[in-house]
Image 1 (cartoon, rainbow, N blue to C red):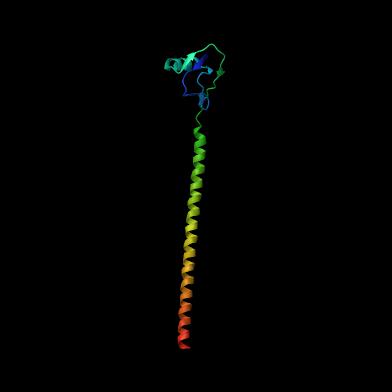
Image 2: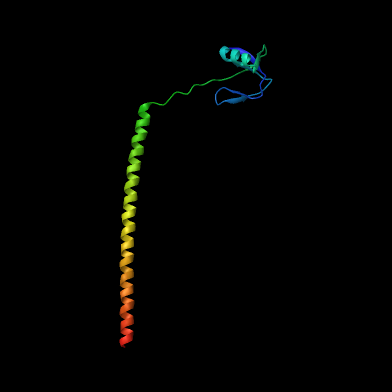
Length: 118
């Protein structure tokens, strides 16, 4: 580990890419300190500093994604079935409305015919 004083005003590091404050001293890995010093972003310091936490995220297991994919496939199949059911109900309602409209038109025509005769 090495202590470095930050010179750059635009430097992010550590877990969650926290912004490092210029003029503040941090305790970082020696390789990172050497890179920052070489880039002119920091200088070596003897002051006591705050340790930065570096974390590496591990990739999720392939088995987890296959289980999620199967759940997604099942959900999509269920959605398609529900859409097909909704379309069938909509068509049935449209047919029923057309039949009622025809019956009403026929009744109006019969009433008009009866009114002419009477």
